Length: 293
Image 1 (cartoon, one colour):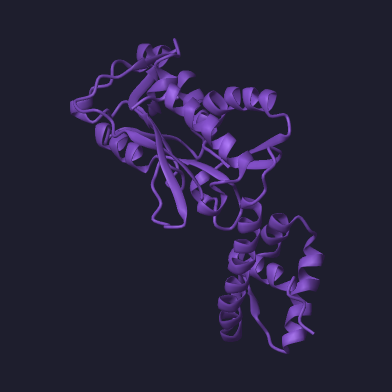
Image 2 (tube, helix red, strand yellow; image 1 turned 90 degrees about the vertical axis):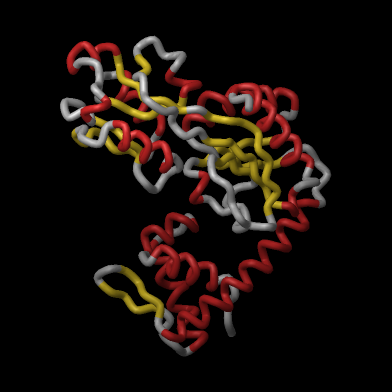
């Protein structure tokens, strides 16, 4: 008989294409992942995944099972969201997906205040909000700099983040004032990786210093900020952080860096869940106070 729980393990392997990442997601051992996958294939009497040097790949039968398994998963998650939305207690865990900079400098203080007023609410903060799915219950609330087109989410614009080009005073003394008309051939430009939010700002920075030598590339806004203030080169940084740092000097540019609106998102099924409603209200107010329109 088919164990429907085995489908979770199959979905994890199909999505990550390797047992290590899948086991980490489900917090089990690789051997457990292998056993559950073998159990599902045995119950269905068909091979679902081929192991290749590049990772696991779906067989034709596996592609069909994947489609059905995703439907089962979606329905199960819908039940969880709907039941969770009827929870009238101001207690329980709320997972917030938020970029590191906003989490550290805006969310952390307001979360402390929230837990003083509502000690039954436990907050978990996870990074990389653009890679976290609210529909899949990977988080309850997301703070993002880009919009989503999912119509099952409630989206609120709660702030506006401006950016600019910066370098440390020590870097400018060493390398000289950046000559933007020449493309900055004597400078280093540090940027964020293209798999994190900030793509518009990265392209703008590259257009300001097209001849600059490549510097540090990172997926962390905080690492980029630390590298800039320690003399690593030019970097496009959030003004609410960089303007307050005495070690950083703004670089005059012929046009402003593209700004980003800040959005608060949560699933519509959770709109009436007290702990999520209370948390989203506090978080939204904190962002709006720190990053007004």
